[in-house]
Length: 68
Image (cartoon, rainbow, N blue to C red; front, side, top):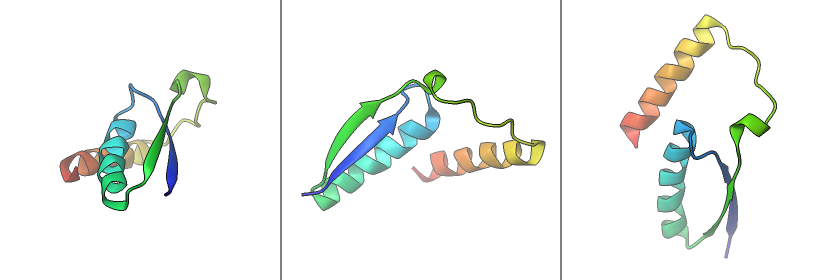
């Protein structure tokens, strides 16, 4: 049986969307999930995105939310 280590931040929208999809996948494949919470503030700060990258990230998140 496969085990998936899933690192997530409870306050991140991306983590929520991934967890929903991961749960469905785990049921379908009989995998188990090793839930590993992290605090995003403990991770290194990402570089500041350009305006175009920020627009794309917002659109991508909205697309995934609509899909899920």
